[in-house]
Image 1: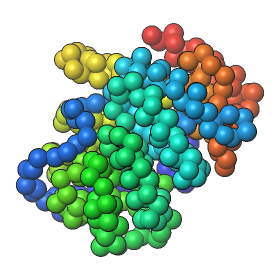
Image 2: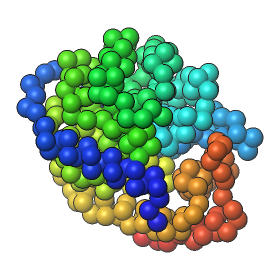
Image 3: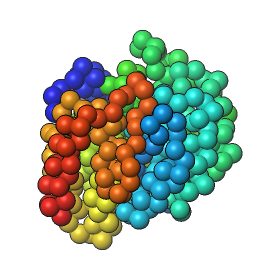
Length: 331
């Protein structure tokens, strides 16, 4: 797929983070952590949020999606992350979506994203998640703002840590938030025992490695299959958007890892499948692609993205169906 402006911003943010990591890389004291999961090396799906043709959330479809991921072997589900189109839903909708996920969790570990651009609404959503039994949170930094200071971010997150006791992970996705998570910010927040870790969706191997090596007691989850080998080599988990079209392939990697089998071979299959679908999806809305492939795999009707994201054309559907047939033939 071609490199977009968003990709370039992400790369630049990742490089900047890597520079900070390499420069500061502090030695941190070991401490007991409330990580929010039974183990670190687990696979969470960064789930899409299914919508009807009129754009309304479909709770029945979400229940079916939760069951699908359970059957595929997922350890957990990330609710209303980037793949879940969280900025497109109101606070009331976000609470209902989380409640629906909790009702149909099927024994899986549930994380959710309460992040907004203001601390009041972020705390409101975080308290709601805590009250409804979520296992942890993945919190995007306050987006839109132009390069907020580490001091300002420390104050923002400190208010959140002091408002709830649920395990909190910071979301490093500078290509979208344009606000990177840095070593210094993590150092400033390390005193909170419910700082559980991060999700690194920058895709920058050097930056991610710096996070992993600097904070081995936290769960520094990879958000990209490109960095998944680094995560597994260091006993870390992953939160993967790839779980939407390829949930079983993602779970296969972790099954093989736990069985001390050929998890690298399973990872290669996932990356090959992603490449085939990525080529076929060129020019299509990524959210629509994930929802379409997932619906095809589940044998259900297609779900609609929430505006401003748009649906697929008939030509794009035909291209994706052909690509999916090639993926299935791979086994």
